Length: 263
Ligand SMILES: Nc1ncnc2c1ncn2[C@@H]1O[C@H](COP(=O)(O)OP(=O)(O)OP(=O)(O)O)[C@@H](O)[C@H]1O
Image 1 (cartoon, helix red, strand yellow):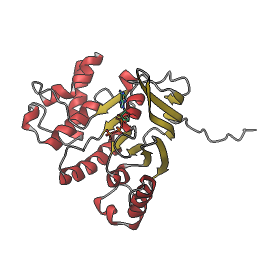
Image 2 (spheres, rainbow, N blue to C red; image 1 turned 90 degrees about the vertical axis):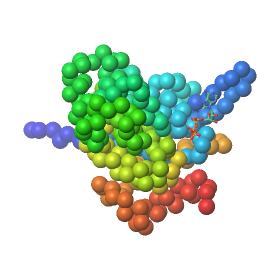
Image 3 (cartoon, helix red, strand yellow; image 1 turned 135 degrees about the horizontal axis):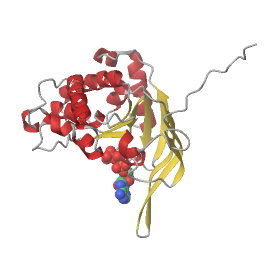
Image 4 (cartoon, rainbow, N blue to C red; image 1 turned 60 degrees about the horizontal axis):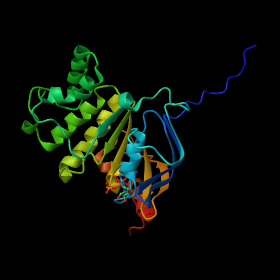
């Protein structure tokens, strides 16, 4: 007789419970992050939104292994963390593309692979695939100054994916772009996410961007720093810009305005 098996519940990639971070300087203490609780499943796109100083970057630094935390629990890659090595499994994208101006676009994308000592031939092949994926076919041999800001940021996204990380952390990736390029990059970003099937955590100051990009949204507040909400964003996929005019989109935006007390 066959036993009836319960469905296997896959563990989340990241499990945070009451995560807390205090910065200490001489005798002063500053609570930068408190009470952050969320589960992030593999393949999620989490948008982290909140006002300046609410601890968004601090949270990314904790997730990337750059900072420790002072309270609560953080499990990445299972309860013992054995399946996760931040140096190998995290890709980072910042507000500025931070490309090395003397290296070609291809050589910039290859940088993490060189640092990690990955096989160069395989990495080069992957770099070309990634450049195709981010819409930079034919730009491999250009120098950064020959590309627009949006194109440079796409190269930075390819660079973040070159070592096949499990988690991609993005800190205000489109904050330096003009409004129209930013909207185009939002669409690009979703396409890259869908094709790469990676887990992304994206910090943004823009409430609309948080709703448009996120499969889930975490709202943080400052003074005092805390996590105000974490919810799934149930909008049709693949997202198109016109979803921004829908009542459902407006409802999510209003929910975040209410949480942040801006109305
Ligand atoms: N190394 C540090 N030492 C002391 N305080 C710090 C340090 N880093 C950040 N802080 C403080 O912690 C708080 C949270 O900073 P964090 O950079 O995480 O906020 P943020 O939400 O990313 O802000 P922004 O949106 O302006 O980038 C801020 O008040 C900041 O001044």
